[in-house]
Image: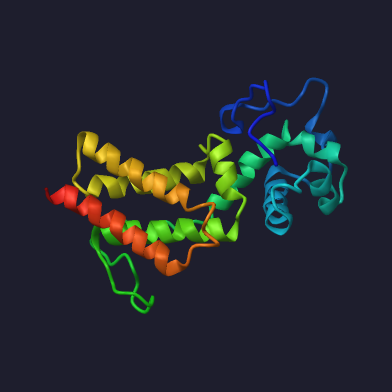
Length: 216
């Protein structure tokens, strides 16, 4: 299983490091037809097809028709590439309009139309669950890496806006936010085993608890 770093190894997130071209190497010498976007997309496809345990730079390079060393023109380590793939998968999230004036669930969606932050939170949670189901490797990587890429930050911002809309303040708001985050991340390992109905029921209970605190 891939982990965030080998024992005793200290690494910095790929999102926090500027990567200059190594001395003596010109950009024109880089392998033709490759770029970081293409490599990241191929990484997502390989992880979806074969899983995290079987992922390797050699397998990825073979799928791209290049040598494994060619990949290191674009990333310094395998861990950097996995961080990039994690954020790329989170880009599949469809972040709902949180204006709170419009229905959070569109007509014809199969469920009752809901407005306000409860409906928005349900949409956000279902979207996150869908991404975890589509990409089972996202949950373990989210636990292993800082998860601070642009799509992760957009998701966090959407959740923050919803929590702001609850009207909770201080320690109560902090606790509610923590409860939501733990619920979403906690469902990662069991997302394929937990029926949709059970997930929605648990989400309803969580939201009811937040509403009770908001009206207390």
